Length: 148
Image (tube, rainbow, N blue to C red; front, side):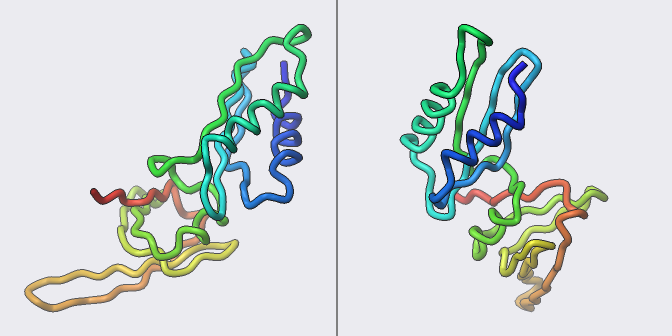
């Protein structure tokens, strides 16, 4: 079986010196490899193709067959790293906490420990602004709210 650590090392080697980073890497027992990448600016399909070709060039299918899928961490994917929270400051997000409570608001700050949301509510022409601070350890998932 191909080790997850090998795939992490190859991915990090290829992405070194760019603003792209691995969000998640999984290797299933049947050698199905799934890599999600993100970027401080943007991820192009070419970036996914380049990483895929690089990893394929480092592995030998004659020794061990595998399936490789490299994708960008899309809008429908939850944030997994503090770096994603930091790059998305200013966006509206939905936060699901471990106690299953849900909060929506604008991401206004983030660091390595947690993040802060600003929530604005309007009830009968009265506008209220609430600030919520969260630790990453208290969160099940955070997703960007997609508005059409």
